[in-house]
Length: 274
Image 1 (cartoon, helix red, strand yellow):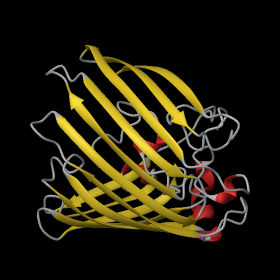
Image 2 (tube, one colour):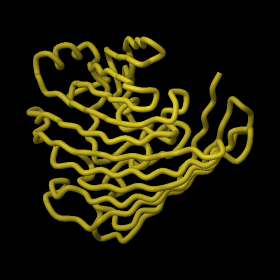
Image 3 (cartoon, one colour):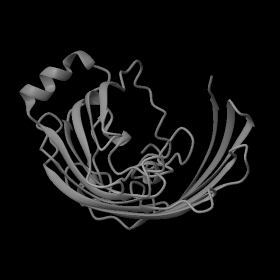
Image 4 (cartoon, helix red, strand yellow):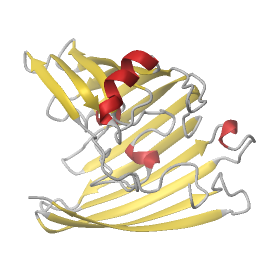
């Protein structure tokens, strides 16, 4: 938001200091026909996901790494369960603390059970197979967020839609949309579309996305122009364990700086794994 943009141009980076992002129990039964997770969770790990959701390896902008119409809470106490009625159709539902605070995990139980301000979600979807569940995925997600007294955020609800499909093990087009009414979401309406392409067996990857978004009037207390976001990145694997990802973003009508018609954001990520 420092650049006047309604959203986040680089999701993984912050000055939060030490945080606890995940500490949970996962259990699956009958080849994951039924599975559940409980503990300190990040709901963006399993709510409204698709193949290019990782902010560490793919898009940097929140408009493409998650859905900006869903006010997903910060990491906190939560639980969710998955049921696959057939090999292809599933239902996923759960609750999480709407006041999750990864910088204060010791308060997680008290916040969840005593404050009673929750984020609830329900998702119905189709997958091509369990192994390719995030790549070949069609789903509809509904959510409701209780009002949060401490931050003076009203309750809200919304729905989201996502479809992605991988072709020839290289091409992954996607289309995602969402609508929200309150709840503290960054955008009240959003439509994203784009394409990912795996260039070679070394896992070099090229991605492009375009987003149309309408900020809620309560962002600054006034109506805004529709905001348009474009992002392209290229993930270059220098060696299998090291990837360099240059990234460029272009925003038309940044909502929080109405005096500006557009802005550019340039990024460069270095990722090393063992």
